[in-house]
Length: 121
Length: 212
Image (cartoon, rainbow over all chains, first blue to last red; front, side, top):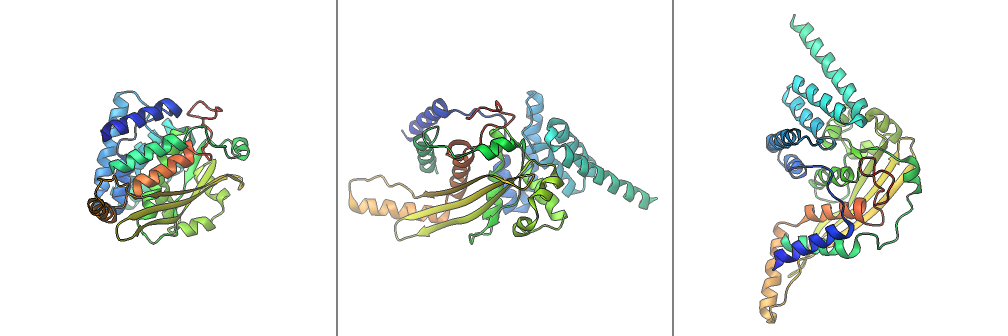
C-alpha cells in the first residue's frame, strides 16, 4: 500500500513538473559523503566512479559534470599522476567550462613530474 | 525512511511546480552563468559532519538544472593546496579571485544554520536550515535563497491510545538513532534549485532560456 503511494506520487510529480534527468550519477553523492565520514571508503567511491564512467562510455552517454575530475583527484591522492592527468584531460575535453582549471592542473602535474625525473637522474 | 520519502514526495507535489510566486531572477538572468563553483560549506550547527554531507548533496540538483558544476571534492582539494582549509577563510577570499582561480562564472556559498534533532519524550523533530548565496565573477550577488525543512515521524493511529503512545515512542527512538538528515537536505536542495520560488532558470545544458 505504502509502495503504491510512493509510486503514485512519484508519477504525479513526473507528470506535473517533470524534470527529466540529464545524467547518470550512480552512487556518486552517497559514496562521496560516506568517504568524508570514513576516509577508508575512498576506495568504494573510486570503484563507483570507475563503473559509472565505463558504463556511460559504453552507452555513449555524456559523463556527468565533474566526475572524470573527481576520479582523477582520487588517483592524484593515491600518487598516480599519469592517471590523474588522463582523467583531467577527459574532463576538459567533455566540459569546456572546466578547461581553465583542468589545463592549469595538468600543467602543474607535468611540471612536478619533470622535476622528479630531473632529480632522479 | 520510507515514510520520509512519501512525505517528501507529497510535499514536493503539493508545494512544488509553478504555484508559488517566483523570486526576481533578473540579476541572475543578466549574468547568465554557465559554470558554478560550489565552495566548502560554512557550518553554524554543532554537527561536525554536516558541512561535508551538505557539500556532497549540492552538485546533482545544480548540474541537473543544466549548469556545469565544478567537481566539489576536487575544488576542496585545490583550495586546501592554496592554503584555504577552513570554509570561513574561503569566505574572506574575494569571490572575483576565486572565480578567476577556477575559471568559474559564479561562486555558490552555502551556510548551515541548523542541522539538529530535538528530542522530546515521545516525538522527535529533525531540522535543517540553510542559506544559499551566489556571486557572479565580477563580485555582484546574483541570487540567494533560504531553506528551512523539518521532519518528524508521522504516527498512524491504531485506535488505541496506549498502543499509539508505544508506536510514537518507538518512532522517536528510531529517529534519534538515525536522524534523516540526508533525505531532508536533498529535499531542501531540490526545493531551492529546482522547484521552489528560488528555482534557477534552466542552464545552458537544459534548453537554455526557458523557465522551468
